[in-house]
Image 1 (spheres, helix red, strand yellow):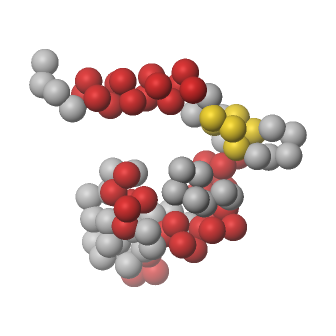
Image 2: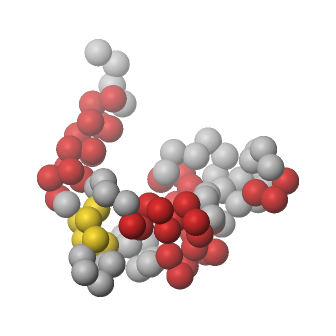
Length: 89
């Protein structure tokens, strides 16, 4: 949502977005190193996986209209943990 993709209707763009792939921790944001030939050149997951992300429990929760809303305390915890992991000891 921060990058301007409101829902899974934009999955085709998300799959090819190298910035999104980098933010997700992909080692190869171009997708050239993917194992299956059908996935090569596509750095991120397809619509089925993105749909599971959009409708799952986790950092986000779904309202009655399936609009994703954020849970600030979980997002803050994620960033703190990620920051601390980036430093040895």
